[in-house]
Amino acid sequence: MKTLDDGRDLLFVDRHVLQETTSAPAFEGLRRRGLRVRHPELTIATQDHIVSTEPGRTETTNPQGRELMTLMRRNSADNSIRHFGVEDPRQGIVHVIAPELGVALPGSVLACGDSHTSTAGGLGALGIGVGTSEVEHVLATQTLALARPRAMRIDFQGKLPQGVTAKDVILHAIGLFGIAAGQGHAIEYAGEAIRVLPVEARLTICNMSIEIGARLGLIAPDEATFAYLQGREFLPEQAVLDRAMASWRMLASDAGAGFDKELTVDCSKIAPQVTWGTTQEDVVGIDRPVPDVGAFTDAAQRDRATEAMRYMDVVPGKPLEGLPVDIAFIGSCTNARLSDLEAAAVVIEGRKVAAHVRAMVVPGSMSVKRAAEAKGLDKIFRAAGFEWRDAGCSMCVSINQDVVGPGKRCIATTNRNFENRQGPRSRTHLASPAMVAAAAVAGAITDVRKMIAS
Image (cartoon, rainbow, N blue to C red; front, side, top):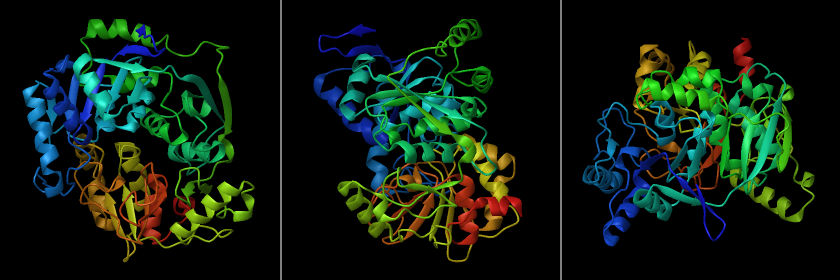
């Protein structure tokens, strides 16, 4: 690391992950400048954002994505970069395959042209989302100039109640502290509630660091992390790995370490969460009503909340439970890992999707899809009336064929509920996989704890 004249730190990027939408102009920039990729062996590329998720899809299934996917394949081949196209068994969402392949490692710097690269923090990595110009810079130099963020810690205390998941925990924290709470900070997630989480749940927590305003977030690696990494494809050879693990065990913050900002969350009182508005801080427990507009004392907040309620067509002071949904979507880099699908399948098994609901499961990677099928989860979902798709970003972002129609209401396991995010005039409620599964069956937003108990 080197400190530049402007005060930023110049970091070596240990691994660089590419996706099709931000990589194409970066490669074009390299060609214009006559530059080559500095370290192709430290770079991988995957097709995820624009790819069709129809079973058996090809690069041409989604005509709007054909050009960018073809460019990624060509650019990867021209620069000797590993490319995981739709035919590759390792294809999947960038933030899902980086951990599952062992590309993201504790203490490493991982860059990708997508904001949710923070997901890798679940392994104790520094996952940094970058823009297209920075993608070009990393390709050319394998370095990244970064203003050093301030240190922030959120301490999650208490035991999670039944039916409450990592997604509920991070949504609750964003609701408490707001979408700007982490601005200018790197967040360490700590506390007893975090330490007992399995690694895939930790990835979900760190994925939504961006939604609380931070550039990145991480959880200190521990024995659960090291067990998760065993046997991953791109781990270093054993002798190197042994030395690395000795260093990784020293990455936890020292006792008494100082932070610029510290916050605490009592997890023992959290209920399953659902968003009601158009930012992630517009969230309530399923057992609570949509807030009354009068609860917002600041005029600007009151105006924004009023507009959000109008857009979402929800009633202030009324509960979300019972609000009909048109689409139930389980997928995205936030909640499309095997454990997420297992949690949804527990709710779904033996039940049927409501007749008016379109229900979809899009695994985060083809590896996740195969693992789920080996456990028979696909049969559970199909028997209930869910579509069982191939891997991709899908309905998280409306730049592929999976789109929510105008005025339609979707409950989703994704990370963003902005206006028009899932399609023009679409309405999005964020929730956990179990809550989405419950809504699919009920045909309306409902409290999954009632189904778990029954």
